[in-house]
Image (tube, rainbow, N blue to C red; front, side, top):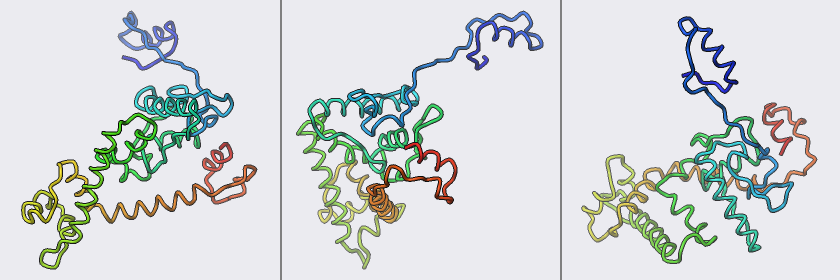
Length: 264
């Protein structure tokens, strides 16, 4: 097929201009989808319009694809619309907390000149944004806004406590002068192997909890470094820059960055 959204009469001329296709017929012409677009720089981190109060925008209208990106925005916009009706604190995820946080932050602060897709490479702190710890990161927010029940939340906090206890126990137990945590840091070692060796000295965990303990121990150095970067970023994020600041005066900034900062 031919990837095109040109008018049908132009498409048929284009196809018939090729050798051997002078009498070709098009069974299904190509088409392009057009939709309304609102510059996401005109929206708040809650996805409420800065111009029209109480108007929340989500999906392709913000310049993204209509798939996972649109669904993610729908969650944020829907929650915030409900919270505003109840006069409650808005729901905003940080870049270090979720890919949704990266998506919304990119849109409302950087804008987009083409349909935005969410890639893992866009997240600076993706080591913290793993699928295995999504519940630990996000369910507390779900509980706060009323999407997670009391029993689910208590189960989550119990899991968190088990993981913490498992890690602390590994640090306190020593085998031939080495802590169990340092042994678990080895690529071939697992929590299950250590538990079978140490028995009741280590608490019995679920497979999910064991996996969390292993990842936290094996990547401890990288995680510690990334947490330090997040803390530094949060300190800078809370620094106020007066509205009339002229970024064009900073000659070390790339032109693209300069233009985007001027728009924010």
